[in-house]
Every structure is written in C-alpha cells, then in structure tokens.
Length: 92
Image (cartoon, rainbow, N blue to C red; front, side, top):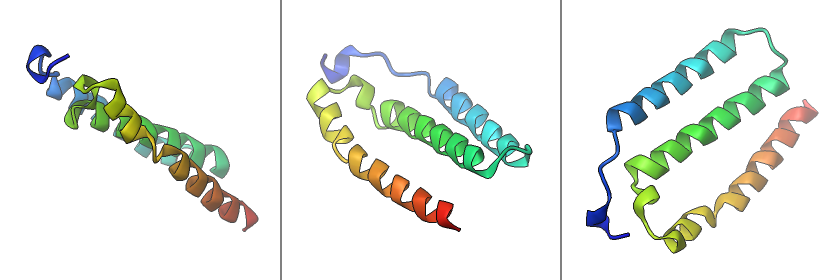
C-alpha cells in the first residue's frame, strides 16, 4: 500500500480513545484494588495507549509490514526491563 493510497485516520476519534483510556487509568488509581493488580492494569492501559499512538499518529498502520517488525523489535527488551522492575517492586 502506497502512502498516498490510504485514508487519513480520524484523529479526533483516536484522541477520544486516548482520553477515555486516561480517564480509566485515573479512576483505577482511586479504586480499592490490590496494588499488584493496579500496576498490571496501568501497564496494560499504557501499552494500549502506546499502540494507538504508534499506529495512528506515527502512521505505522499504513506502513509496510517489514517496518512494523523494525518497530516491534525492541519490545522483548522492554518487557524484560518491566518484569525486572516489577520483581524489585515485589521484594519490598
């Protein structure tokens, strides 16, 4: 798919989705749920928001699949670092 072949995404809808996810994150902090579940929920919501930003605002959704592989290559390192930090957090 050529860059000129795709429609422009509805940026307002994407922004609305990011706003809703942010409201959910703020609400989750004020709910009385166990701390480890809260951290997991916030990490998942943050990953979802990062995916929306990468796909639409960075236009990765409209790029060739091999470019998506380049963008996803550092993901395992990020997961390893997050797990390491969470294990340090769990020791306290």
